[in-house]
Length: 140
Ligand code: SF4
Ligand code: SF4
Image (cartoon, rainbow, N blue to C red; front, side, top):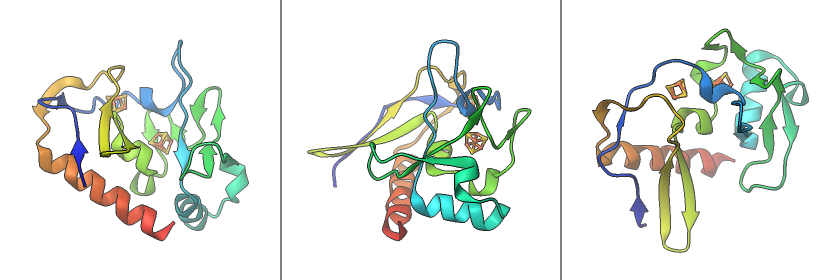
């Protein structure tokens, strides 16, 4: 399968938590797979609809994370309370995976303050992310 990704992009997360909520000019849509909602619910003991709303408009995602004051309900200061089981969309940020007629492509969000810092991402990292997405989608 053909995979395209941004070349020579440097990234180092600054742990600013900007990607965990809305910015002054843009809403953040934190989409969730059904399997992710189940996993978060099983781990936290919370009912799915207490932290997620149904959203059928963007396949394969079936839910979106609820926000409080524009921030993800699991954000605590600048820390994620479900870090080890955070959804794929959070794991991949500032990259997002799109599917087109000719395969897959990763896009990068230039809004992330970590872009341009740290080491350049090697092609293997995008391939690993694609594999991670495939394995998640298989169980969904
Ligand atoms: S991924 Fe980017 S926006 Fe999110 S915490 Fe890291 S530096 Fe901030
Ligand atoms: S699940 Fe965690 S990483 Fe994802 S938006 Fe919420 S607080 Fe941020």
